[in-house]
Length: 434
Image (cartoon, rainbow, N blue to C red; front, side, top):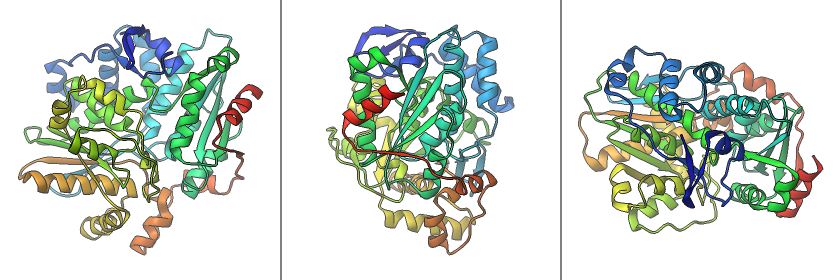
């Protein structure tokens, strides 16, 4: 499989080049040259396949011979070590739980697949790779956990000071070894801008080998398609319309779902659920995309005013606005709405949601109401364990959350971070000092 740049479809790269570079030389994002359809027999037999078997079949269909079967099997066996169960709330509404991994967030799937793939592809190289990661919360901890103690790889995490939860910050800043946390005086958009500037800096790239583990790296998105297929496999009545609501910030998770759709997954509608950072629903309303400064909300991982993967979504639809709008519905919800949803779902189903899942639930319910659906499978993604946002959820529900042991352990560790400004030169100087 060849991969092209969203800035120039004639600029092709191998899978290895796309993984290790992270971003194309012209600043574009890598995209697969095709998204081949999976066979009818695959979908007919999918209910009898395990999550790992589904993941292998999907990855093999996409990557073809880019990885030997033995290597791909090892990568998936090492990455997919936890489930992504579909939990039934009622006869029509289900939750896809994506927080069963080591950092209790959906980013574990992509980060662990990427870490194993990158280690395999770089095993014969003598150069050390510096992974740059901008994070609004969960990406950084998932990547750090996935790459911890990986030979020949240093990870540099950039996170916005004061704009991640306490638990998220502890997960980011307590690992040591080959992981460094840079606490940026700014927003997530500032962190993402700094990373993009580093990749565009030709003088820096002469001195350091850089790669990215954000969703700008195509290797993060490939495994994020796996759990959409797995959710379909676990759905009992596959004859009903299949609606999936995705809490969306940088839109990597939605893009992974759209990859699955283009490979044949029978989704009737994708729902892009967003908080007050509403640039995408505004685009669907007006056909004009206008990036904005990010707004701080309770669902902080979605506080993105200029989502990188919007370029990939446009590319998937050949910039055809009407075609894109036909497949994707999007709505924005406030913090007050989010709090109300957390209360409603707990009261009605005795199910605890985190703020991101709450936005996903709201968007699903809004779509069902707007389109007057009667019989359907409605799935929303719960992307993080609610205890990662205990300060919010416990206050809203007036109820204590049982925190997983893995999260409790990081709370007692000493935070270690390096504070930097949002000026690029400061980041560059740090990278050159490594």
